[in-house]
Length: 563
Image 1 (tube, rainbow, N blue to C red):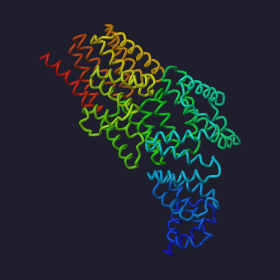
Image 2 (spheres, rainbow, N blue to C red; image 1 turned 60 degrees about the horizontal axis):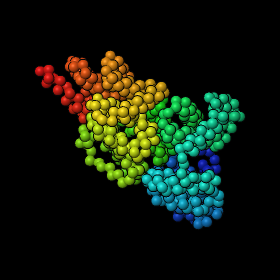
Image 3 (tube, rainbow, N blue to C red; image 1 turned 135 degrees about the vertical axis):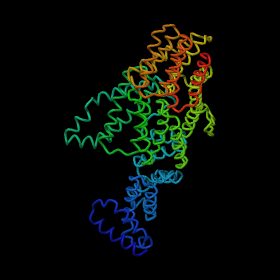
Image 4 (cartoon, one colour; image 1 turned 30 degrees about the vertical axis):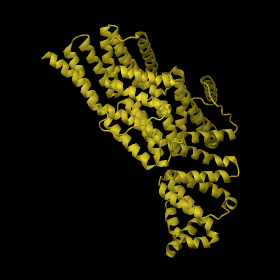
């Protein structure tokens, strides 16, 4: 033991005097010298220095995503501090305690992390020194599903900073604030602000020192505000989508130019690719980048990683990724949540899992149940029930669940991605009801008009994501209105658009709808069989045994009548 201590001490004294970054040798030095804790404590001149050594080793391990090793080094460093360390070594105590809380959080020791952070809040000399601890504490609460505690923590901090937190916010007031923020942004940033400033070395320093601390944070805050605004206003005006894209582009430019931590990367990717980018980027691109955000968040110990995981699955369902592969991916995320003892996004992933397994084989491969205990958890459940009902061919049930969902929050007040999923299918479902000549036709016609109008706006921003949906809605409308040639052309356009964009499930849906058109209206069995067989192939590739069986019944029905 003494040999290891002496070797570590020799390395420590040599490299400490050199003053340069020693790289991974710091781990060897700390590991060796830590064998002699009894001698370290006796050597008062070295105790603080070795504590700093272990803190640096812990920080380096955290940066390398080796959270358990970091926890070990930082725990050892903490044990070397004197009893009066907050008075005698304030800066060291503040930094070391925060790193220790970060490591504990990354190792799922949430209670210990919370205790350390509360200890920091009680010892710091000014409120500014408390801010990182409050931020991490709010993240820990969020990871454990303690939303109220996270909200209370953030509200307390904002109040201490002089912000006025209203008891409630009206949509009109929120709109005014966001519009003012966007105006401020447009006055400060033009199209080439980052590139122009980076050309000059002096201004580069200003960008580093000022933009990231002052405007950089405002940019990120504005980006999040624009995200919030876009999510709650929906897609009612193309120019606001363009504004959100412009803001997000500058935010991502900052990521590329500067060394931004993995926690910030996962947070920005989650907000951008999960909530905004699908307005103009292909869904598949959003999914790929959300996976990057998940990996970055997981490696850095950020809770935003699991937010990204939820958006990965949501985007995968939207874009028609293979259902069996999605089911495995959900199970992987759920396993990690259990390992990390986190409740963040667990219910959302469980609900998504129920939908995916229901589309595969009516839930035959899953035994997971989601318990809804309040209305706050009812809306996503109802939405998923409506989505499952649509793909299973239950038109009345589908409309019932969509109606229940809209009663909770208003259909156009749900999240925009939910709106994107629901509107085309709600429109198609209403068209199916109209074909069956059900009652209340005026109400269903209004839903169809709203769905087509929304898809036109969406397709104007992203032909890739939304044109196939628009063409299918229009085809079904023409079918209903007996504009047969136009309906045929639109079915073909929808099929081709879905194929080009890689939406195999919606390609299958368009083929299926075309098959019904030829079967029911044209009595063209040959054409109907052709389209139904194409639909079956698409659904097989999607991985939905439920849809394959439904289409096969139509094929069998035609064949039996022909024979």
